[in-house]
Every structure is written in structure tokens, then in C-alpha cells.
Image (cartoon, rainbow, N blue to C red; front, top):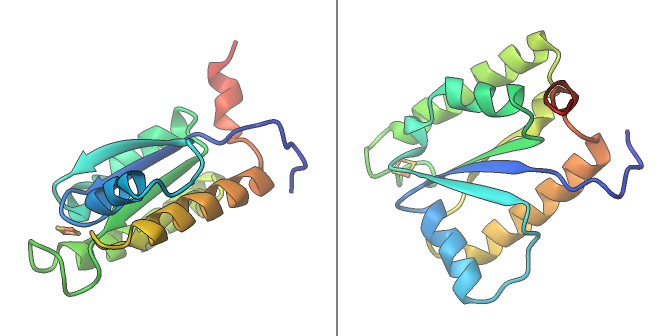
Length: 143
Ligand code: FES
């Protein structure tokens, strides 16, 4: 646990084009307040998030990775998000085995109409990552 209140977590967010990306946009147009700690990468489906992307982000010092996709049953590619859920569980095991706290990776189903849920997710994730402290891999890259 960290009491480092000065550190601002860096979050890489891979968001599905059809749901969560629009939800994030809706949060913005509705002027919902949420921390500006997220860098968004738009994907056509959450299943397009190769596990290597997640691992690379964390190995290169991101404090957290958020994968946002359509709710189960709503994926525009039928079963993409079921694949995402299986990958997420496998990634958690890989992170744990690698000594990277698996709590740095979040998977959330957020629809296009759930701007508030997106804002709340980011707010909660930033608070959780502040509690967890900076990604130890960060130090490796800051010389
Ligand atoms: S299209 Fe959104 S998760 Fe597949």
C-alpha cells in the first residue's frame, strides 16, 4: 500500500469502437468529471486487444491498463468479448506469475449509453492505482 498522493497514475485504455469508446465520448459531451489520467486507444472490438499490447504497456511503465468492451451478448462480432474475458483471466495469471500486480489490469463492460459508468470506472481505477502505488517498471525507464 502506498501513501504517495503526489503520483498520478498513467492508464492506457483500449476501448471498443462500438460501445465503450462512445461511452467515453458521451461522458465528455455530458461534461462528466473524471480524472484526466487515461490515454485512449480505439479498437474495433475488445477482442482485438492482443495480450502483447497489455503486457507491453505495463512493462513500459503504464500504471494500469483498462480494457473496455460491449456487454456480454452485445459484441458486434458475436463472441469477441467472450474471447476477451478468457484472455483477461489468462493475462491476470501471467501478470501474477511475472510479479506484476494483476490489479493493474481492469476489464469493464461499458455500453455507448453508459458515459457515467465510464467516468466512474476511471475515477475508481485512478483511486485504486494511487493506493497501489506506481508501477515498479516505471523506475526502469526513468534514468
Ligand atoms: S464489438 Fe465491442 S466488444 Fe466486440
